[in-house]
Length: 297
Length: 278
Image (tube, rainbow over all chains, first blue to last red; front, side, top):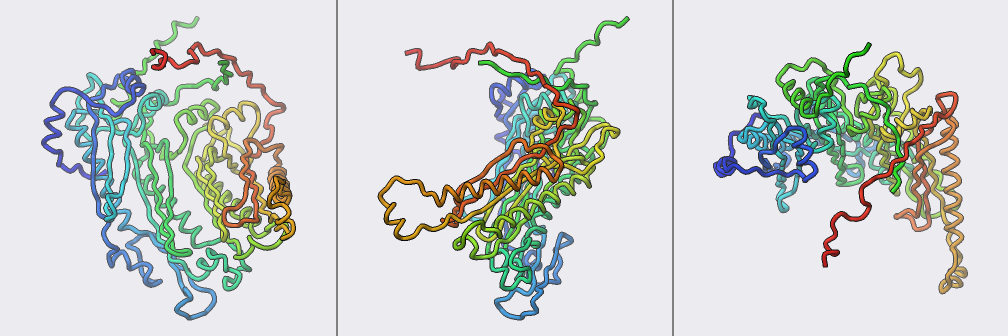
């Protein structure tokens, strides 16, 4: 995550010094937390309102011509097989990675995350559990609010942390099972990738269902340009997350992809992968095969 | 002579040990990615398997314009578009799993959408393999939509998954003549054109799924999901999609899992009912 911004509000510092704790845990998770020796010290939060800037010229470069790059990211060109020249015929198409969208998202998320962790550090917490993150548009202004919250915890008698606390989306029983299974949480991990598809003629015709007229594919075929984009947007986000693990494991991963369609074949794909970065601190204890039960009630 | 059993470490001790280890430099590097829950991972571990990587496969296949609204019998272009998209997505999924060192993919989430002009199939799951290299399978990578728990129970029972099988069929419900429409307008009557179309789609789809299972040398398909009904964009077309995991017996005979019967002592009624106070 990004460097911690030192912008903890003064009012928050005073509130933290009051002596009572707050927690976002359910009663069951709270009980499990105490059972693990973890004591909640405060509900910590981080916000960041991020404006998605207009598509800058650096961003629009790709898609305007088939020879432009995409700042070192993924780019793939598709050429019309028909030899037609017409304003209404898309003689080339391009898939490209939208780095500037990914950068803006990363900045917004990392700022909110860092602010949450800064609150946890101010409380002397060793970790933050039960993290919940959300992104909400603020009105209709192109502004997205990133909001992260979780419960800061300390482990009694453990030396005060010198580094950023650990964090996890898990709490309660599931967190206890992670420890029992030999893993220790390191941090939450979330990343996005964004790929834009400018359709060329074949993609447009296949998506419209008029492939039989112009596509040279006998009317039905796999829509290769969109398939490439769909697979790539997933590859990119997984590769980015893998590189942030530094040899640790990603547990409980959640991969989702959203698609915005501007015209037939003109798409913007955004993938988001999140999960818990965990590190093995001991080998799996030998486990008996689970015993199936039939419950009578 | 065996000594006294080693003292059981408490959860608090384990948590302390785990958190203290964070200060040390990590000694193992796995880079594993997985969308399994911790319960599923523990289930897998109990039979000697482990997650390897999160993998996915996607395919979109076009359906030519104009096939949905007129004609008779099966809408072959749509059925074959679905079959090809599913096959291609599965091939990509298992190829990724194989590259990551997996022997199979479990817990595959299947998203399939049929549009009027194309079919989209998305598969996401976790590649898994036996922990013991000596136990690794000498056959092609399998894909299964069974959860980690169900995969474990299947293996314990002596069966093994072979792959995903699907069958899909889209069929026209022939339009009634104007005379029949007028005659039936004020009656409670079965519309046999739709019933027959659905039966026709069902038979073709189930047959295709079964053939796919036999091609994989499977003896059956478990956890079959069925999606059926009219197509939202075509009033006179119905569709039927069936998919599940192909299995076969891996041991000489089925191993009974002998479930234990338990009786919960929890009171089945609500513990505290405010209305009873009145």
